[in-house]
Image 1: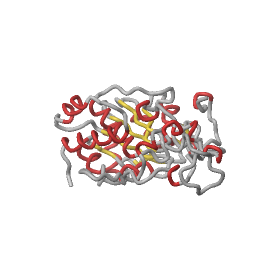
Image 2: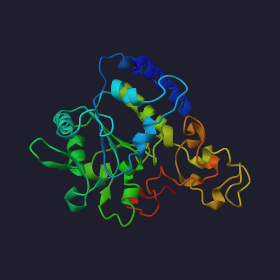
Image 3: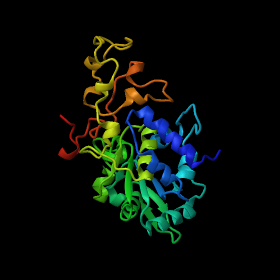
Image 4: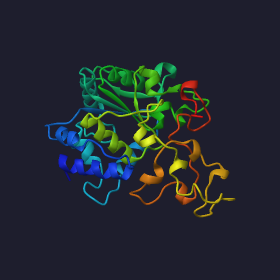
Length: 301
């Protein structure tokens, strides 16, 4: 199935409504989508589990388009993605190198950036001349002339689980490696609607307000606890008690920013706390809470 730009606009409307972010400049987005071709996007995957790509591609919707695969291919001119592109090996590497030689592209990075051993803990591709390119080199090269750098998930944004102690491969965030600001769509994995929202904002050229950690305030402006329907209810004394607040059992919702109680997951089926599972704070810069890497990424008070 190939979707039209009009259908993507409808997808963006649905996602904006689901996210509860209020009015957006849909007329600007509609004008942008009317133009032939979309912004060139190159999507790299580093030290991660590919969970954010899986989350995005498993987006469930009751209306067309039901998935985002065609959005990635037909709307934003996705030129490189290790899991989605038809080209492989040196042919795929040539595409990435071509994009790196230009400017104005959007660089989407999923996963942290290993820096130990000269970056040799993670390889991106091999050039036609046989030269191997580390993931660190690929990110640095493609970030240099990128119009926007989009961190997909907590690993790319701040290191996440791959950067947890003892961090033998020296995983760092994209911003630490490139020295450039990044738009951080946090989560482990991130929510597919959050990515769709970010795509819509970037395509339309609409301004994006971010917090001190580079997260869009429209998505991460309030804590999970503030939005949780269990907030004013009695505290649960043990696991498995329906409809009770889980704060006393160690829920990280009071210190974690995100609108999960509004967006829900799996097509609106459920979310962590509603299944009597604690919020583990996966959108927090210090996640998984075993490695406060620097004061810059310390947890908000």
